[in-house]
Image (cartoon, rainbow over all chains, first blue to last red; front, side, top):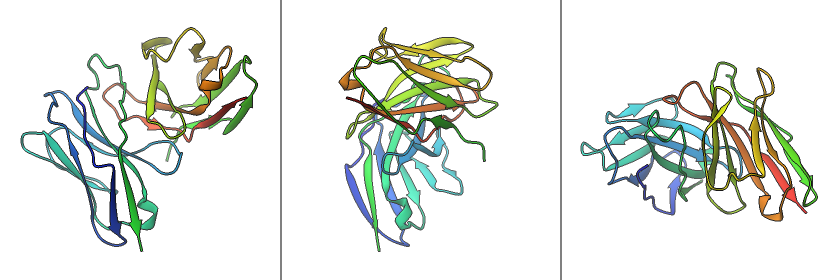
Amino acid sequence: DAKTTQPPSMDCAEGRAANLPCNHSTISGNEYVYWYRQIHSQGPQYIIHGLKNNETNEMASLIITEDRKSSTLILPHATLRDTAVYYCIVSALGGTSYGKLTFGQGTILTVHP
Amino acid sequence: EPEVTQTPSHQVTQMGQEVILRCVPISNHLYFYWYRQILGQKVEFLVSFYNNEISEKSEIFDDQFSVERPDGSNFTLKIRSTKLEDSAMYFCASSASLLETQYFGPGTRLLVL
């Protein structure tokens, strides 16, 4: 699986959009970009994923650059409950990885009042 | 909304004892996983399981570890002879297929004394 690079921490004001970047310059054609988050020591929570098109769901939007070497997770209106560690994971599900997700250190997002 | 459940939420054991961590995956899911997270460290993949067989395992998953699906609903992780360094949060996850999203349980906090 391709390696990802994320900033170690970010701050965001409550009610504003939080834009979390991820670099995955070695991504290959069959690898998806997944975003999970972890609040305290709870289980990782799935947020969104995409292959090459931008995606949106009720939680967030995922913007993937045309060359697929980087992506941005957007939380449109951050709340205090969005304070968490956010993980960007690249995975070739269905290939030889048998579903293995490789977590990095992630970005600690702190939403402040 | 269906969710992965895990029991117990906390487990304290003496070094050398056997522990069994239990998981109930989402009911129509066919792929099951265990991950662990040592305090302050990354979430690490342990093993994936499909069709009553291990699909992939990490180097952490040595002979002291085993997994089983004893019935149609439970998925267990057994550690035969616990060590101090096995103290961690253990997360179970499941997915409908290799191409589908993995959903994580809340975790079991294991403390080995």
